[in-house]
Amino acid sequence: MAIKNFSNIIPEIYELSEKCLANGTIDKELYDIHHVNRGLRDLNGKGVVTGLTEISTIVSSKTSGGKSLPCDGELYYRGIHIDSLVSGFLGDDRFGFEETIYLLLFGELPDCRQLDEFKQLLVEYRALPRNFVRDVVMKAPNNDIMNSLARSVLTLYSYDKNANDTSVPNVLRQCIQLISNFPSLAVYAYQAYNHYIKKKSLYIHHPVADKSIAENILILLRQDSKYTALEAKLLDLALVLHAEHGGGNNSTFTTHVVTSSGTDTYSSVAASLCSLKGPKHGGANIKVCQMFDDIKKNVKNWEDFDEISAYLSKILEKEAFDKSGLIYGMGHAVYSISDPRAEVFKKYVGLLSKEKGMEKEFNLYNNVAAAATWLIAQKRKIYKGVSPNIDFYSGFAYSMMNLPQELYTPIFAVARIAGWSAHRIEEIINGNKIIRPAYKAVASVKKYVPITERNTK
Image (cartoon, rainbow, N blue to C red; front, side, top):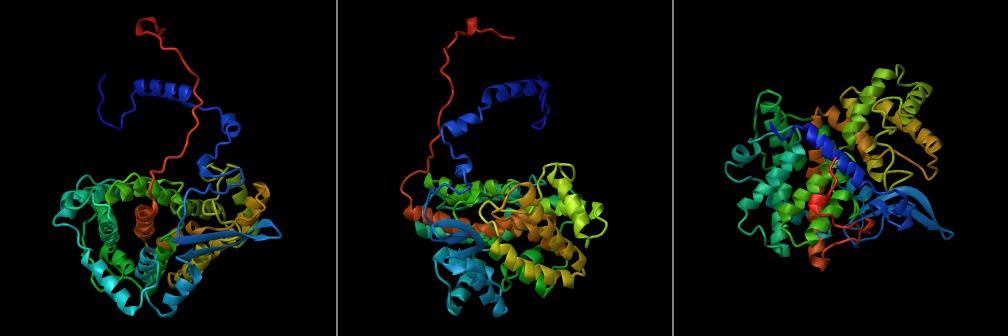
């Protein structure tokens, strides 16, 4: 049997995969019989409580008259409402991501001196090891930047003399270093892919010490390193809104699970990256962009609500776009009436659309959101409410900034590592047991048959 490469699926593999399907499929009724909370969610869709956190609070319902009723979504970082946090730094015409990292890690807002010192600390840890870009990032480039990012993180373990030290001071040092490294690692991985796989010019810029993380992403990415003030402000806002979202999202829960085993920071962060990579978690904004490309081709009048609704109905009925029956960017596992991140972000996406001359596209997004909200509620019988989530607008914002789609999820990671880091430290401080949920075994008992008596077909 000759196997030419790892990507080959030879007939023997297909035959064996049939055994996986035949012997690996569990009767769906057994999940109900044994009261299994699939996806760690109960029958009402609420998450099963598996831990406590002080890092962020998500509010999607409020109790009135003894009943839980859906409400406009609210998000708090360390007890501070996201609207107040955003209004604070935007009102001062400042970038807010660095301040947000400080808040998530240390549980309080910094004063001017503390913020300046923390920014300087981020700059000091920003440099990658000597020749790391050449020897690691540029080697074996691939078209999935998240994989390249995870490989780089795991390789950084080899450069750390205290890699296995899980004391809080050392883990904090490692987290700050990775937070600082992530923008360069992500953009350099994209540049390697763009050069070696897409056969385009290669240009590598160094980060600028007195620029924000958002500004440096644009500096590193663009050939001329130029950007507008609004572009940098909107990207900074996107980083703030994606930085943290409770302990129950898949990648952050992964942080808690892997950290509870006592492993090192690099392994924990790599595991969370691999979780975030999944299209059900971090890649949703790409699907939104692809869906809108399809809508633009098939809806002639972008202001005609009836025409938009008719085509969205086809999408819901699995007759259009990718035949999945999903209107991407609509709805959320927790929020119902509104996603507070989307509400904050939408205003500034609108401003950027004016700067870029793309107001018609922005209006189309709003019209689709309005039509989809009504259609999904009616066709899917979701009466608690459904609304656009942060992914609905973030992909459009990134496209207006000419950010490549290959970087959409890595930029999410650049933001979310702030939350992962805070949760890793929280687990180290408070966790004393390995996280090990129960699984109910439902396999029937079988008798061992000697190999000479087995009936082979």
